[in-house]
Length: 176
Image 1 (cartoon, rainbow, N blue to C red):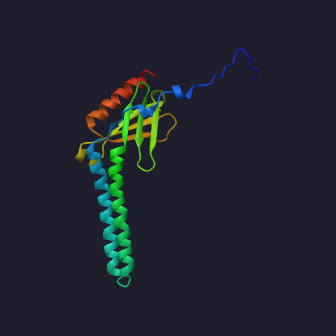
Image 2: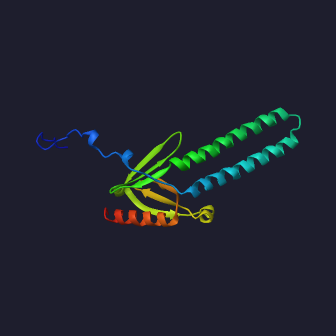
Image 3: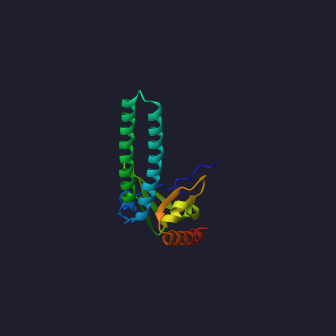
């Protein structure tokens, strides 16, 4: 390997304060129907768990105190789940800038993902059965080197998801 001459190499410091701040971007919220989807999924889980607890209570008649403790624990757990669903639907958001896509998710542990267009391989829109009933979609963004989608933006109206997909596809074709 050839040594680098001192005149050919520079490594100047970057002023961190002058970098673009993703926090300043006004993020778009997800559809209100996404909260309904989260509540439906939580309710289905609640039904199965409570059904299992009720069936177990018929077979374990000598353990009524344990039954009520387990029942109370699951009531609290699902109460927390409904509250968590509300907070997630309220706080999650996405934004599109000139050079990247931003997606914020989480309630207690918030995570922000910023994906530059030059890293995106392709974009797809997905709808499952419940999404079709509620008329919402999920935008999936796949980046280089990943085995799955790196960013999933759920709870978008289908028109918005399709428009975002087309816009991102157009921008990534310019980077190819």
